[in-house]
Length: 261
Ligand code: SF4
Image 1: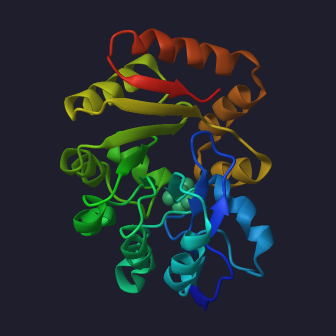
Image 2: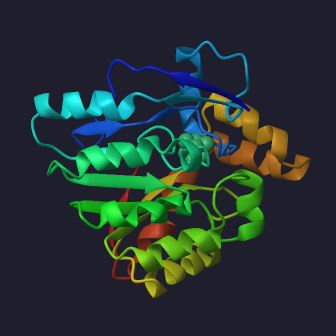
């Protein structure tokens, strides 16, 4: 793993994400190294030769830059981890995210988190003082599948623990993994688990097999599963059928939801 300390000029960027005004990403690159990671597009904006998941640039001056920027920006909602996970393992040592929260806790910007790491629980003391909601990402609730697709992110059990500890939470269920978590049985199982943990709101997204994502996914699947993925990739029907399946299942649950396609 190649780790660089870098100095950023700006850390709060305007966001085009629905319902979000600003994005804050204290790290470029992500140690979690999820196989399907869409943020791999960031690699072309860096000078890194390493593979995605094998480098991280730590914006060590992010808290100082943030403390100046936030005074100039109009109040608005901030999404932490819009691109890469702000609670990846390095954060335990660097505490850049925590220091940014220290700055944010002195301002009343609403903050939304999205993470796959229970390291976020370390910062509950600050989060509880803020107008904040915490999103936890799941692509499956099967720990064996999680280990294949998200080898360095927190276990399913630890992510469920975040939902138990933080009441103002939501689940981002996606990207749904074709073959592994897209059946009616698997989706129901996941939704039931979230409901048991009192999750009220769920965002759902399908897998987008962009060329650089597809290249990485093919490396970890066996031949039979590659063929199944290939079929799904070429299918115009799959997204519609999956959406219908999900909407039918959602009728049996009381979530507020948004399906992303
Ligand atoms: S946690 Fe998010 S940013 Fe990090 S590798 Fe996984 S998908 Fe990519």
